[in-house]
Figure 1: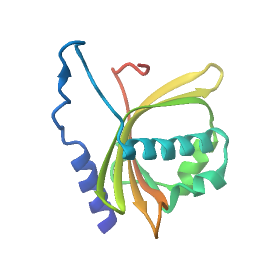
Figure 2 (figure 1 turned 90 degrees about the vertical axis):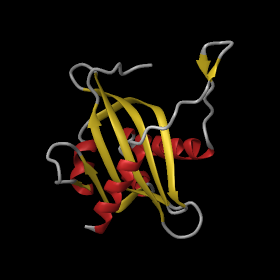
Figure 3 (figure 1 turned 45 degrees about the horizontal axis):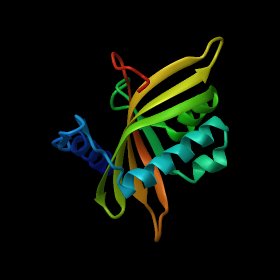
Figure 4 (figure 1 turned 45 degrees about the vertical axis):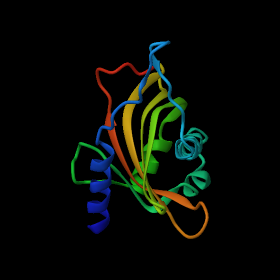
Length: 164
């Protein structure tokens, strides 16, 4: 129960809006550079998605906590267990994926909150593309970089273009 409260607080902290970077007056666009944390966690999230694409549970075990769970708006308050989520994710063929708008908030040296827009295309009778807003809670266990995702908050995008 305590972990759920901490995760909920972390998600709320991530939703706070910070002022945008100053505009480049000469060119009329923002200058955006990726932080080391954005690069690091983008690589972890990409490893995760490649493991799903290759249906590789061993690779997923390197990035998912044993107590990993997925939270969605339906049914709220009832997370999807790691085992149930694995059955669903390996039951589909992921053709391609794209991460956009990756943001990372280091809450402590052991806890990071990563949010991004995820676009996935799955193979079925015809390819289907889905977009989601994702918030992942990452915990660093032990010494060094031993990051595992404990919780994923997953929300379907609607009314927002999937490609950019």
